[in-house]
Length: 116
Length: 116
Image 1 (cartoon, rainbow over the protein chains, first blue to last red):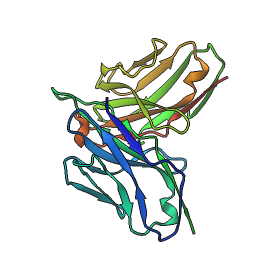
Image 2: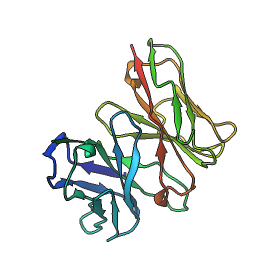
Image 3: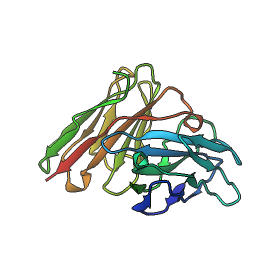
Image 4: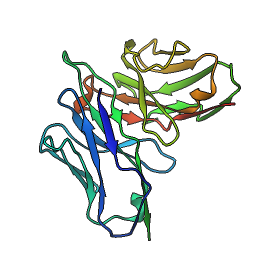
């Protein structure tokens, strides 16, 4: 079945450091890929997405590129801020043949802590 | 309200009790999902509704779990004869579109269930 593997945390960085959170996936079809973020005390919210190979999703200074050849969707940011402290989830959606919606398959989440 | 609303936010139940968790999706959203998130894990798919039709309930862990959305809006997740392993955060999410791979899921803050 489908699965998502992401680096385990917590990841602790200093403000303005470069961030990479690795994510790889396995899927039977041709999935769309997502990064969701959960700030303290809030619900999950979509950070960025990519729907086909070589697409780059970007938002709030974060980027991730859909790499079909390496089945990866690593999240990057050039200069992190304290306000980026949150839990980040990589996820995929892999509609079965015939269409229709399927639930997202999530990774376990990576807790990011940014220190001033 | 503008977002997905879940209630109660926190529920403590004695083992064997029945519980009901409510989700108010964003008005007009066709798709509604329930997820279960254990501590330190990513959300895991439970069930999916398209309007009032429950199209996928493959993620429900046992026949003690039951979900409904009778009028295609509010949904209730019911857990009968709760067990300690049911302790988790139960997330509700809704989406405007029917096909998930291009759409965005909007999550509620979750209902945290603790079974003693």
